[in-house]
Length: 333
Image 1 (cartoon, rainbow, N blue to C red):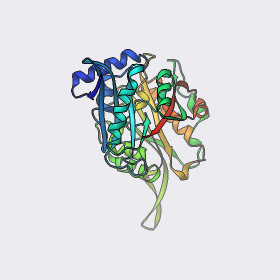
Image 2 (cartoon, rainbow, N blue to C red):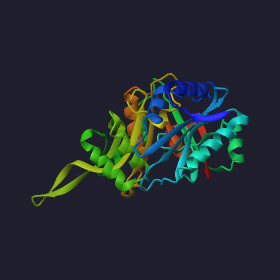
Image 3 (cartoon, rainbow, N blue to C red):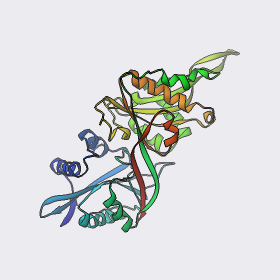
Image 4 (cartoon, rainbow, N blue to C red):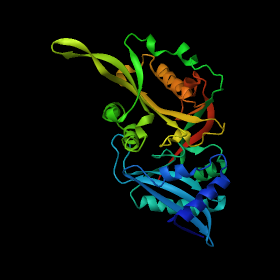
């Protein structure tokens, strides 16, 4: 039995097939493999390891680490276990190889899931045998997080959202605007100021890809500015918040789409999203979300997923229910 790098497409296809046979509830689609493993974000390194017994692939793993720190997010001392599968009695061999490899690159803390371009935010609770293994190897369980989902019937009334959650109830005019090439700088400036860590890092990478900006949304309000001694309306508005959606037919597939599509209906995902510090506590978030959901429904997307959250009751106000549960795990090397 040996552990060796996966170096070519044939070996990677065999690894994906092995995973899909063992984890039929979490099928790895080829477009996700291409995006999340073979086309990493800037500063992000990816290693694929295979576990072989007499030349036959018995397990494989994907780990990630940064070559440069990302400001307000994480340092090069943190790494991630993105995917891992091996027979129960052979998990230790594969894990030890990964542990030694990451330690040799300066990683001192490793997390299960939650990596940039992640497949999982943590260990799925279904992986009970694997959970026992990680406990034995010294991983600690931190929090539980969830994927939430709502499937809308064809006869769903799109104006249901606006009955309870209306943006036009606010004194100053507020509206939702799809991001475009022209306001990429505006989006990144807002994120750098309000959410300078992971969300800025993601947007800086995603927005450089074809179609990457089209699934970002801005929440804006009208403002006035001084011009020739008079107050005039600022047509571009001021950004109060942002959100990202992902669509099954979009060019970039965010993690809220990883395990979607079981309904057979067109599907989309929502998140992350956030409001500027000055806009919080005013009741804007749910109307902002409702406005985006209405736009997705009008485009024909009927299955909507919100991933990696612990705000179950909050999103429950919009009819979302838990569909997946995860344990966040970490270990010092």
